[in-house]
Image 1 (tube, rainbow, N blue to C red):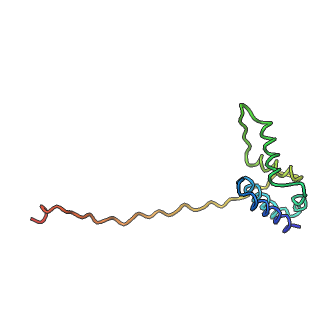
Image 2 (tube, rainbow, N blue to C red; image 1 turned 90 degrees about the horizontal axis):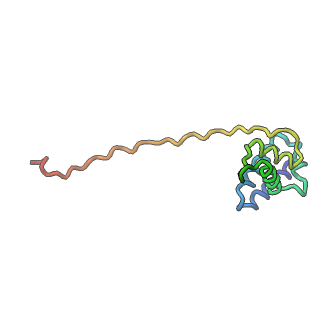
Image 3 (tube, rainbow, N blue to C red; image 1 turned 60 degrees about the horizontal axis):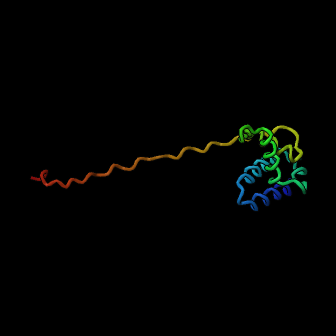
Length: 121
């Protein structure tokens, strides 16, 4: 069941190149399933999709909007997604490994070429 749920999420992620948020939510759900494999059955529900979970987030954000603007934290957004899929509990925090800063090396000093003939006289 777990591999089927991950496959379902991967299919939706790969089929939605025009919406980058589907990948974000899909990756979150895959990480969630890795630590909560019992939730795979809920992800497999035929009428539940990542795209529709985004609609659920949009509806919640509309309830919070003030002056035409609304914001959700990552935790709020992921909690709405889990609720949409019928998964109880708070979203697990995922530790993101920081990427090391690129090493910047200074270019070797360039030899200055002097074209003044006065130095040779």
